[in-house]
Image (tube, rainbow, N blue to C red; front, side):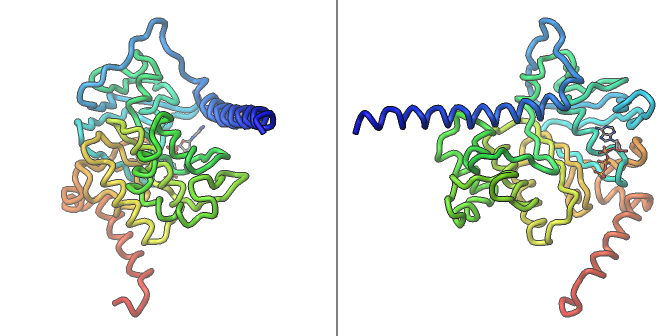
Length: 302
Ligand code: ATP
């Protein structure tokens, strides 16, 4: 029996190694795809995180030299505050989140965390302090357990279940045929946009970063999932410096500050109340969205 056990055990080990290195390769390519743009300076120090204040200081940027996307963008996110960005499609909202995670370097100006230009510190230390819940979470072709644990590979089983419970995905996982061992991703069980975003939320809860970027899914979720995700966002944004890229205005009502973007520029800023009182672009967007919601309401709901 032992004779059979050892080779099988070894095969299991090899399988796990290959499986994990495939996932790591996938991760590497995902990072390389966007990451060849930036590099650490020689002997760059680590980011020193004090209270996680974020600053965009006169930032201009274009993905290529002949098309500028952001024009002189400046804003602050004080420690623990939430700043939400709204605006028309293509205005440059998600680009802000890519610059804060340093997928690309700015062309002019600076992005700073606690007074340090993010180009001057190691990418590794900087990214360790930021959690991203992206629009469309890429899942590894692996178990849902692995996909959550990826937020902090040394997390215990109990911590993973706890994170999944906070992200309101534990109950759903328990209904799957192989529960946490169910394979997800392109070649496994396909999860809906909302479910994938919850996996990303669980990962982020595990990682427990002081800075959070939440890029709301563009694709419409049903209103129940949307409300649930918004409640979860509120939960994880608590006491973290948070940048929310919002595609629905209902997400931003409670933000400490809202930035309204148009063609790469901030054209208005303030709280929901202040912007409504101002009666300009944001107020018009809000009125339009309210009208659309009225139209969508079923007759019997009134
Ligand atoms: P949406 O609300 O539709 O998500 P957005 O305001 O988040 O839009 P961005 O994703 O920031 O807009 O894109 C801003 C502009 O930059 C768009 O015109 C887009 O085509 C362009 N862009 C985005 N990513 C790239 C890229 N990798 N290479 C070149 N151009 C890009």
